Length: 73
Image 1 (cartoon, rainbow, N blue to C red):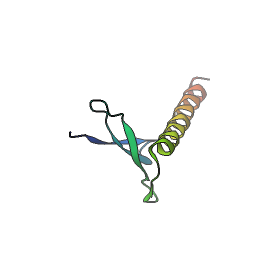
Image 2: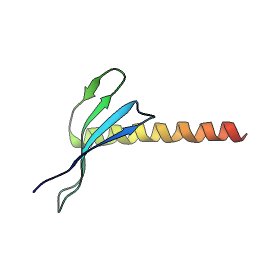
Image 3: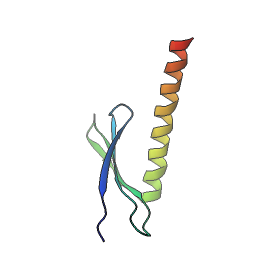
Image 4: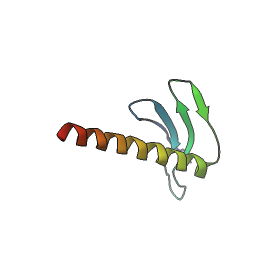
Protein backbone atom coordinates (compact mmCIF):
# COMPACT_ATOMS: atom_id res chain seq x y z
CA UNK A 1 0.00 0.00 0.00
CA UNK A 2 1.46 3.36 -1.01
CA UNK A 3 1.47 6.32 1.34
CA UNK A 4 1.97 9.96 0.49
CA UNK A 5 4.71 11.95 2.22
CA UNK A 6 3.79 15.60 2.57
CA UNK A 7 5.80 18.66 3.64
CA UNK A 8 4.22 21.68 5.30
CA UNK A 9 5.80 24.97 6.32
CA UNK A 10 4.62 26.56 9.57
CA UNK A 11 5.58 29.64 11.59
CA UNK A 12 6.12 31.75 8.45
CA UNK A 13 8.42 29.16 6.92
CA UNK A 14 10.71 28.71 9.89
CA UNK A 15 9.78 25.06 10.44
CA UNK A 16 9.04 22.30 7.93
CA UNK A 17 6.97 19.31 9.01
CA UNK A 18 7.29 16.05 7.07
CA UNK A 19 4.31 13.79 7.61
CA UNK A 20 2.71 10.69 6.14
CA UNK A 21 -0.95 11.01 5.21
CA UNK A 22 -3.55 8.56 6.41
CA UNK A 23 -4.35 5.74 3.99
CA UNK A 24 -6.86 2.99 4.69
CA UNK A 25 -6.64 1.94 8.33
CA UNK A 26 -3.27 3.62 8.90
CA UNK A 27 -3.22 6.89 10.82
CA UNK A 28 -1.43 10.01 9.66
CA UNK A 29 1.80 10.68 11.53
CA UNK A 30 4.63 13.17 11.72
CA UNK A 31 7.99 11.68 10.80
CA UNK A 32 10.32 14.70 11.00
CA UNK A 33 10.39 18.37 11.98
CA UNK A 34 13.09 20.58 10.50
CA UNK A 35 14.24 24.01 11.65
CA UNK A 36 14.87 25.59 8.25
CA UNK A 37 17.05 28.47 9.52
CA UNK A 38 19.44 26.29 11.53
CA UNK A 39 19.12 23.20 9.29
CA UNK A 40 18.48 21.05 12.33
CA UNK A 41 16.15 18.06 12.09
CA UNK A 42 14.19 16.60 14.98
CA UNK A 43 13.48 12.87 15.01
CA UNK A 44 11.66 10.77 17.54
CA UNK A 45 8.52 8.80 18.10
CA UNK A 46 5.39 9.82 16.20
CA UNK A 47 3.59 10.88 19.38
CA UNK A 48 6.48 13.08 20.55
CA UNK A 49 6.78 14.78 17.17
CA UNK A 50 3.01 15.24 17.00
CA UNK A 51 3.02 17.02 20.37
CA UNK A 52 5.92 19.24 19.24
CA UNK A 53 4.11 20.11 16.00
CA UNK A 54 0.94 21.01 17.90
CA UNK A 55 2.97 23.21 20.24
CA UNK A 56 4.57 25.03 17.30
CA UNK A 57 1.22 25.49 15.59
CA UNK A 58 -0.26 26.85 18.82
CA UNK A 59 2.55 29.39 19.16
CA UNK A 60 2.09 30.50 15.55
CA UNK A 61 -1.68 30.85 16.07
CA UNK A 62 -1.24 32.89 19.27
CA UNK A 63 1.35 35.18 17.66
CA UNK A 64 -0.90 35.80 14.65
CA UNK A 65 -3.92 36.49 16.88
CA UNK A 66 -1.95 38.92 19.07
CA UNK A 67 -0.63 40.83 16.05
CA UNK A 68 -4.18 41.21 14.73
CA UNK A 69 -5.33 42.53 18.10
CA UNK A 70 -2.45 45.03 18.17
CA UNK A 71 -3.25 46.23 14.67
CA UNK A 72 -6.97 46.60 15.43
CA UNK A 73 -6.49 48.25 18.84
